[in-house]
Amino acid sequence: MKPLPNQTNTSKLAIPSNKKGLAAIGKYKYGLLFASPWIIGLLVFYAIPLFSSIYFSFTSYSILQPGEFVGFQNYQELMQDSLFWKSVYNTIYFAVLYVPLSIIFGVALAMMLNMKVKGMAIYRTIFFLPTLVPHVALAVLWMWLLNPGFGLVNGLLNMIGIEGPSWLGSEVWSKPSLIMMSLWGIGQAIVIYLAGLGDIPEDYYDAAEVDGANWFQRTFHITLPLLTPVIFFNLVMGIIGAFQQFTLPYALTQGKGTPANSLTFYVMYLYDNGFKFFKMGYASAMAWILFVIIMALTALVFITSKRWVHYQGK
Image (cartoon, rainbow, N blue to C red; front, side, top):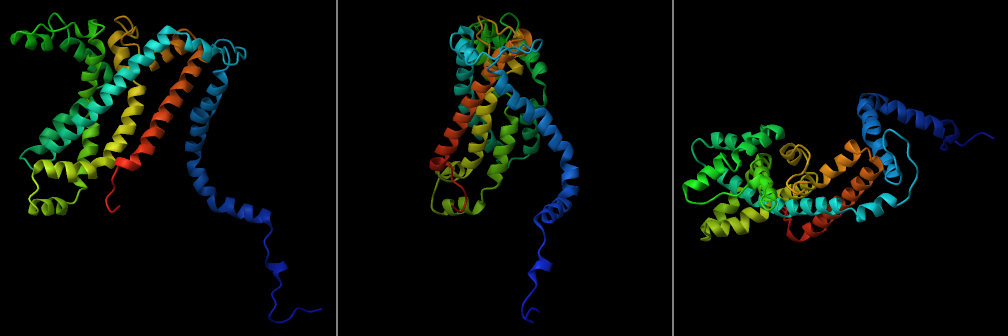
């Protein structure tokens, strides 16, 4: 029986599913080919170590030996490790003080550097330069500045009749000293804040000025609300960076965390367990606890951002 003229023989036009798959692969093969170095690098250097560390956290793996499966023993030992809790306290102390201060000083300095003043490009360069200094060189510089005997900071304090503390040699002042050093390098955040300030339309300020709004009213009702997306970004990045603090305290104390472990931060203790004591299973457990903490705090910031982050046009 011949098909009617208005009927189509779909059996001849249908493409088998396997040919469709081959056609799709052929369509994207060049893209996959050029992206393959990145994909291979992601799998080899990120994905495989990431999922391997989950398994290692439940073993007694020590790099030199394969280790045995020990279940939650590493996590139980961590809960009883006094130095672990000391590192947690030091890290939280640093994060709670450094992150808000970095936002406050970053926004304030960005607003100052956003003013239309002659030679502003020079001032912006000066504030950004500290971010180019390597952390090891930064540690050496601040060790000299905060030296209790001949340091510049205590020398200036003595000139006005104030006896300076021991700074890095004091258990009380060591963490505030580290916060002060870290605040010296907030130039990258300032650049991001400047970009956010430049994105605010001048029409808003002109309309507010016509309505009689002063500088404080324009700042708190226009600048800061419209800058909240940038503050939100720097808040998330600041939390992640604060909980991963490592290079500066490690260089300051040669990895010892002195005095009295007041500068032993979480990642420093994780590094010691993994690469000094070869307790890689123990270190993997610490790494996953840190991952959960950072993820929880980041999720909390994202959830609360709906209440205080304001986007233009919304």
